[in-house]
Image (cartoon, rainbow, N blue to C red; front, side, top):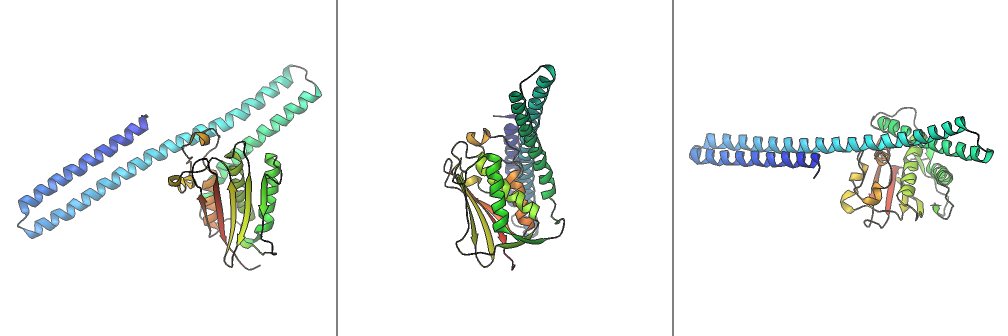
Amino acid sequence: MTGRQKTIAFFITLGSCLVAVAIFLNVGWIMVHGRHLGPLILGIIFFALIIAGLVLYTIFLVREIRRSEQQDSFINAVTHELKTPIASIRLYLETLQSREVSDAQKKEFYSTMLADADRLHYTVDQVLKAGIAGHKNQEGALVSVDMVSLVGECVDLARGRHHLSPDVLEFSVPDYNPEAIVLGNPDELVTAVSNLLDNAVKYSHEKVKIRVDLVLDSKRVQVRVRDNGVGIPQNQLKLVFQRFYRVPLRAVRQVKGTGLGLYIVRSIAKKHGGRVFAESPGEGKGSTFTLELPKVEA
């Protein structure tokens, strides 16, 4: 049992003991003043307030301890995500500075350093976007966005970034010529869809097989991203959208991340009057994430 788990157990035990003492005192009060209606009612009211206060106090402390633990995990993850590419870039630069290398090796070094720089940029970008996503006010003018075009661009970017073929990352739209217009910020919507695609790739490990579907009705536009990856236990389907939260599965811990991607998606969906939700048959059986936005007339 870790130190934080012991602290949580301590406060839960303390809260239970205080509740038991309050119940004992209230029973004693009733026995003493059972024949007097006024003091009896007053004692019951105060007893209810004390119990409610103790329960809320205990819940608050446990939540704060868990939030602190999640923040520590986030700091550790971000530190690793920043230090690893920096150390790699420094090593290659020192090698280039200290000795002669062939042109082929130079190209390989430059390619690796660019990949590490992209990794650094992605981590910093996620942290900045998480801070912006927490603000409720929309920045910039809202415009009409064609989700067919936007999702298609995001899929093309994901294929290029992760070196995937069209049969591994499929994108499907309805056979008829649909108008999937939403009112929003194009940059933020690209961020939301791209985060869903990146997550699907990362948590699929070697067996990447992703399908993206655009589902329309008269009022909504849904972007569904389905993968065959690690899956999500039923009791974790809502928790995955919390800031810093990561599913406590070994397959998930093997993938480096900050726990911010899905939080950013949820924040963007809310700012656009929509929602995002997850579905999964269970661990190891893949998952489906659906970004749902209100549809508007072209």
